[in-house]
Amino acid sequence: MTGLTVQGPVARGRDPRRVDVPVGGTRTFGTCACGSCDWDLPIAGEPDFRGALVADGAVWWVVNLSDREPLFVASVDHPGEATAVRPGERLPFGFDMAIVTPSRGPATVSVTVFASVPEAPVPLRPRCPAVHPGVPALDPDARYYAVLEALCEPGGVLAPTSADIAGRLGLSPRAVDAHIDYLVRKLDLPEPATRRHGWKRMALIAHVRRSGVMPLARTA
Ligand SMILES: [Zn+2]
Image 1 (cartoon, rainbow, N blue to C red):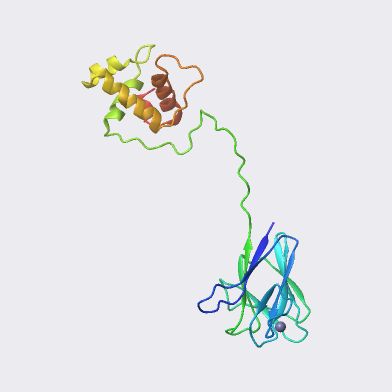
Image 2 (cartoon, helix red, strand yellow):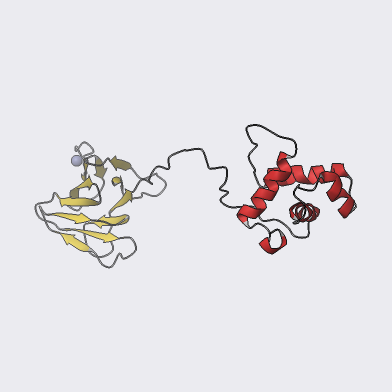
């Protein structure tokens, strides 16, 4: 569904007038020298330049309300390829941004049409804790990486404890715990409903196996 915004000519030093055309709606524009014509978007100027814009879902329409003068519609990307809308005629357009002028050449007045296609709403739902889009990159030179490698090293049935890792890397168990805490935060690993002792280590191992955040050959 496409609503429109129609913008009047840009006068120096002043914000251009804008009107919104809701889907299914029609708004008119036209030149007015008296200041009291009933256009939704009055335009100061001499030429007989008047029309209506209709927002109609996937397309929008230009209606030429003049009984004498054509008006011209072009995509802003291709201003030289204008389509003439004859007096009284009604034509559909699909441009995202278009310019409507009273002449094919450089125009003294114009209106600009912006078609707005609302983005599809993204439904909010809790994410799956097993899926981590955009896994943060790990730095293989960082100390935490060595801790993670040691943690995920294939070995016995039980995951190595912080003390095991500390002994291998020449760190204090406390430092290993700090690295593990850091990794859990960095990788945004969810806390389980019931926290068992060592859940962070188990969550890290599971994450590495699942995500390929480290080469799997080293963690198989
Ligand atoms: Zn007027």
